[in-house]
Structures are given as structure tokens and as C-alpha cells.
Length: 90
Image (cartoon, rainbow, N blue to C red; front, side, top):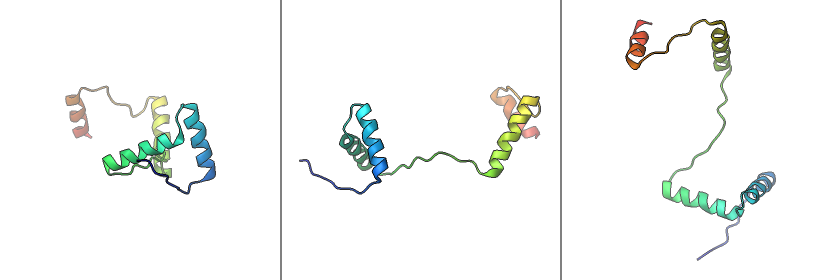
């Protein structure tokens, strides 16, 4: 038995979702139903957000890139055993 569900959502989000669903050949309702089925089966909600590094992590990444280009602070490649030995030596 089917029923109708009314939900509030952002207009721009709805429009973009409808457009993408149409490009994929799917009605938006099919996508919503699929999400709801997964929610019921898995009993969990997953939110995906891009990982955004903080300033300290950004500085560390940039320094590692500079070091790599300059050939500094590079170790390996290692076998698993060699890697453990290397870590213990630090």
C-alpha cells in the first residue's frame, strides 16, 4: 500500500536533486524511498561532509609537500617488518 509523505526541504536542493534524478532516469520519489528503506534496514543515519583540515593540518600537509619535492624527510619503501623496525627506531 502506497502513501503520500509531505516533507519540507530547501527549494534549490529539491530542484538540483530532481534534475540529477531525471538525468539518471529515476523519479525523485524512488531515491527518497531507497534512502528510507536503507534507513530502516541499517537503523542508522549517515551524513557525508567533505573533510576540511584545520590550519595546523594544512600547514603540516604543505610542509610535507615541500619536503617531498626537496627530497627531505622521505623514508621507505619498506616491507611490513622493516617498517615496524623503522618506527621503533624513531
